Image (cartoon, rainbow, N blue to C red; front, side, top):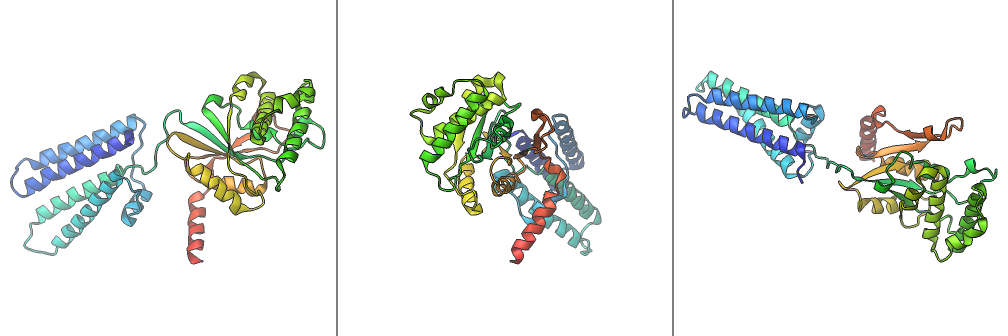
Length: 352
C-alpha cells in the first residue's frame, strides 16, 4: 500500500527519468533544445521538493540513505528496488563518464554534460529515497504491552502500596476505546488456578473494603468466571479506583493475554511475547511498551522490544513524593545513542 510519501518518491523518479531522457536524445543530436527541457524538468523536481516541505513530508540527503544504497541494504519494496536499480545504473554511468575523460576521441563538452546530468539524477534519487518503514494508520489502535506482578494484598495494608496500581496507571490520558492491554502472563511459579483464584478473591475484598463497598459481593462478582476473566475483573476494578471518572470506559477495557511463561526464564518470556506480538505488529496497531509491572527480567525484555522506532517506551517512577498523575514517564529514545549501542552489539555478536 502506497502512502503520501511514496507518491512523492515515485513522482521524483519519473521526472528524473524524463529529464534524463530529454538529455539523452539531445546529446545524440536529435533534439536541439534538450537543455531547456532538461532544466525545466529539474525545476519541477525542485518545486516538488518545496511542495513536500510545505506538506510536512521531509525529504533530505542523509548519510544513512547513501549507506543503504551503496550496501544494497534496502527494504524489499518494489519502489525501493526501483530506486536501487536506477542508482546502480547511475553509478555505472558516472564511472563511464569518468573513464571517458581519458579517451581523446570523446568531446569534452559532451562528457561534462553527461556527468552533470548523472550527478543531478543521483542526488534526486538519494533525496527522494522512499521510506522503507510502514506508516501507522491514523487512529491506529494502541496495544500496551506490559506484565503483571504477583497478586497479593500489600503487606502494609495501605492501598497506595498495591503492586497492581502501576499496571493501570499507563491508562491515564489515553482513549480507552482505542487501546488494549496485552499482558505477558506469568505462571506465578506454577501456582494452581485454585490458589491464584484465592489470591484474587483476597485482593478484591481488600479493594472493596478500601472503597467502602460490601466485600460479600466479591464471590458473586467472580462466580462462574475462569482464571483469566477473574484477573481481568481485578484489573478493571483497580483501574476504576484509579480513574473514578472513567468507570464505564474501564469496564469496557479490552485485555489480552499471552500464553503463560516463567518470569524467571528470559527465553521463555521472549518466545511467548514475540509470538504474540508478531501477529499484531502492523499498520493498524501501534505498540506501547510499559516496563514497570513484573520482574526486572521482564522489564529488560519489554525494554528490548521497544527498540523499534515506532514503539513508545514508558515506565512508572518509584519516586513516591510525586503526584500519581506525574509518575508515568515516557522515555525519549532520541536521548539514548541507540545506533552506537546497536552497532557495537552487532560487532560483538559477529565476533562470536
